[in-house]
Image (cartoon, rainbow, N blue to C red):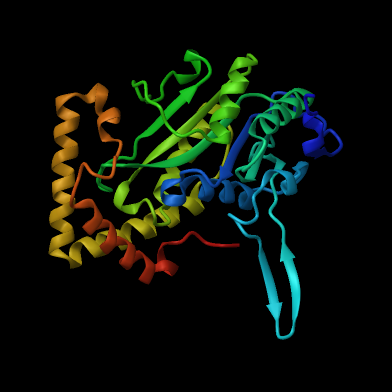
Length: 309
């Protein structure tokens, strides 16, 4: 017996005038180098007032033992519990254009039912294109422009965007399955993956979120302020440059990465993206560089993290 996807969510009253609104989505739990996707999702929720239009049943979708919710214990009693939230929010950009943001933990269970539920909500609200975003590790130096790879359900949606011209098999994710199902249903969907230097993949890296924001606004036409992310990116870049200047070893490793990156670019520019995806073994010096940067950024966390309002 096929389950009803409407069992997975509660949908609030339909908001007027949102037909065609882009539906952005970021689900935390899958790969996200530099926490790029999380930073962008948080930036959007911080930048604009928002209301929740749909809320999913996390008791069914989330494995609490693998991602335990936080609780507060005070003195002699349990004081509070923070249940996870997977929800669809309605926002309006600086020009009052509506858009939606689906965010929260990636479901651990019932992916097929979850994607059917999202498609049902999208059909009911008559949403526009769905757009995902995240960060992926890449064997590149932080001194070169961050590439953003795009994928989509229609070739026309990729115009003007960088793509990965390869056929590969990778572990699946709920966002990827959602894009696949939207395409099968004839709905427009695309996603962006920003390439983050692999030695910074575990750090908070606002420049990557800023690059994602540029791609998302270009694709959707949304008017989103970037000053906060830009300031955080500048602070992070300054902190990294201080580390490079203070360590001859780090500076040498960065120069080696630059040489390899530039050589790959000049040899076959069209296939650079495919050759730059990090596999963890291609560059033996990456672990040394990552360890030094992680220690430095951890010690300077207050100077590299974006503001938290």
